[in-house]
Length: 322
Image 1: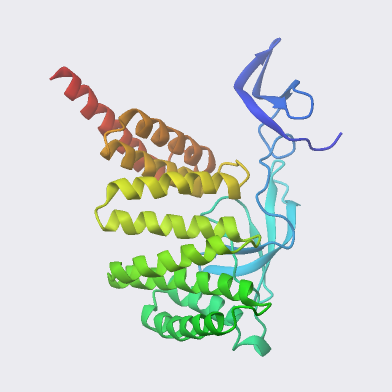
Image 2: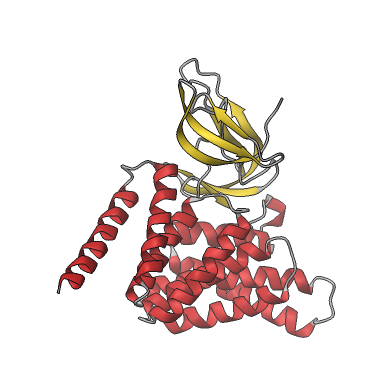
């Protein structure tokens, strides 16, 4: 007994006289099994995070807040939960607890920001946390002032202490600060400064070999795609977006995520704009399917993406008729 990984091979499968919600091919022996009910007592997604991982969680009151996964697959004691398993219990940095009911990027995402104590408030970790929160709250002038000072300090330390044992860590911190600064430049419309910050961040990220490297590569690559889009450069926006899709799949170990679904939809639209309609429509369809499974077919983003998909297909049919 116990939980084993597998892949959903069929939906609404008739076996004998019974209709099962899912037919699943098991990884360990290739055999097919059937989930008798569509609830977390019988079938559930493989979670993206484990106990101890640093994460950002979205709350209605405070927006994005930092914390650490304290427990996974939490049993819901509610008598009306019908076998519902809550993916995560997160201990926030203010010591509050938060139960995260959906394992997707709209609710919980990976964070490289460390926990900061009062004694560490002049540290890089403090700048990570506070600048991130300032940007989330659209306090861009304050974020820029804090980040600019820290970026200059970090550049000087790396330049003047190239053989120091901590130089690799400094590069990681500097790449984070440059990414944050690129968001400030984007908000102010300073696209050239945005590009310069991202190019430097990419160089630093490629020089590193820490466990957060794939996540930082994804972050920089996604921001470069945004820069190219804002600059009207669809070809480079498409190139960076295609790279970002591969990086999302690497960081989530191939699991569906809100970020992957959204990225597939946007990349699909770019492919259509670059006259690669078939690939673009396939990506949009895949992204809509992922978001539909994660968020429901009535989700606003899913509805809008479906409408865009239909408009593109309708335009294609009209072109064929002419």
